[in-house]
Image 1 (spheres, rainbow, N blue to C red):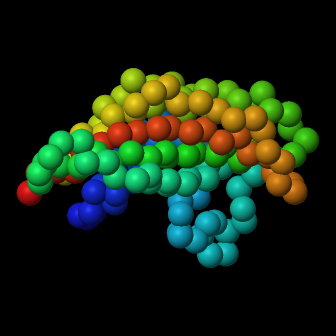
Image 2 (image 1 turned 30 degrees about the vertical axis):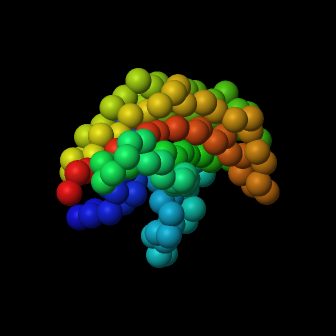
Image 3 (image 1 turned 90 degrees about the vertical axis):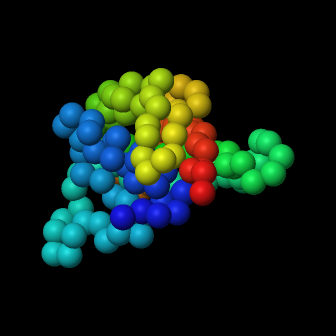
Length: 141
């Protein structure tokens, strides 16, 4: 169970991604992927969690604002074009657009429409990063 605010945020946005119908396999930070003895799937999602500087919005001990980016890269085989990868990126964008998530007393708001960057080639794979900006407030103690 996640206890720290960043851990709660990461789990909530990851859980939201897992609710995407037909979601591809997911490579999460610091988790062995693929599982031992399994081949690398040709298509998958790679996650990155990029918390930003915490902001104190009010005076005193009020909850602080957490900001950051959750990035979902659509990884696709070279030679298959980018239409399919862009379709998956659009599904991720639509799945997170205008969302507010609640987890363990933390309200997490997708602060603007997620966006896809241009394709990046990495050897035998192409990735299309989708950036999902969020803001959240730490729970009151």
